[in-house]
Image 1 (tube, rainbow, N blue to C red):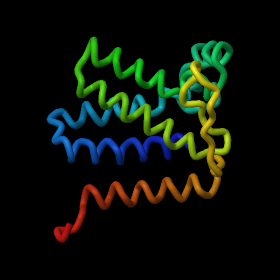
Image 2: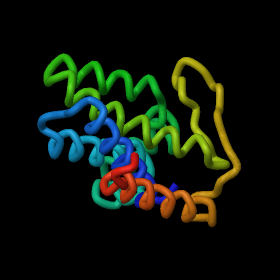
Image 3: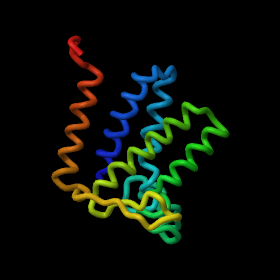
Length: 156
């Protein structure tokens, strides 16, 4: 998926989560959700986050490959537990939401993800190509949904 598709999907989920659970520090929650949504692609030096952290990205890719450990639900869970232990449950939830949103979208791509790496080689993959027409369609759908959620008509 494109970086921008990951961000707008994380933004949509973050806004919905904030509205449903009435998060007090919504700006912090949303910021963490958006930042963490980009972290899984640190394992690829050509990604937006990989370009900003090339030496780290190269080393991670060398040891774990692209869409390996950093595209695992187990890594997302470990991050959630770490932030929850040293920080707050709300911030941990924001991190889990952002990270999971990235994994969900990448699961729809042809390249897919292995969600239980390193415990299992089970692969989940879809039909979409990153940067393809469906990626762009999702991007615009998510933007429309964000606008709807933020400015929904009074009848809803």
